[in-house]
Amino acid sequence: MRNSHNNRYFPRILTIALFTVFLISCNRDRNNPGWEYFPDMSYSAAYKSYTKNPNFKDGMTMRTPAEGTVPRDFTPFEYTLAPESRVKAGLELVNPVIATPETISEGKKIYSEFCIQCHGAGGNGDGHLYVSRLYPLKPRSLVSDNAVKLKDGEIYHSITLGFGSMGAHGGQIRPELRWKLILYIRTLQDEGEGQIKTKKEAL
Image (tube, rainbow, N blue to C red):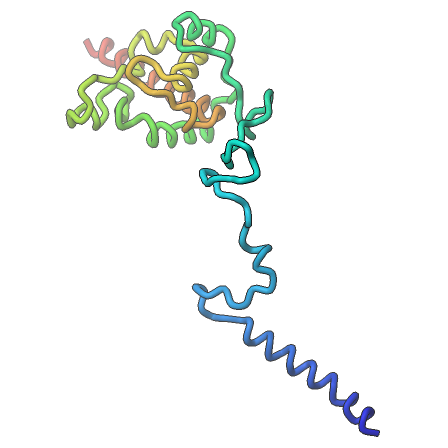
């Protein structure tokens, strides 16, 4: 009889206990994670990149990638800083991105983030860094006759590896965005040619 009586109340007691645990585990304070049932699943036990690692003979955690592998989303660039390599890139590389209002708009965004401070809003090389004398060398004009004559591949080469006093931006701007940036630079060149034509007609 006693066991039967206890068994009758056991489900209720278990339900109350579980409900209490549920209430305790919930916390309105977002700075407190509450109870963690499996902390080893929440916090990685892996070694940090630059810490010593006793599992390897050289004691280094950072390992050299396997030969022949490339990082995810990395596109190999088989060109050098040599002038002839830049010309070769102009002959071999073709912009795979179609010029649309959307792609040009994305290119303008990249230009505003990485180029406008040096090359200026119109691409004339009169950006804030030069005008304010924070940078002594005048950046190249992107709308000059020489720049207009450059092939897309040559401009892509310059963005990727750098050119003259301009540093390489291949590690900062993804390949597709570099091509979109070139599309926007072409619109600046078209606007510049239009302004020159208008001035000549006015004369």
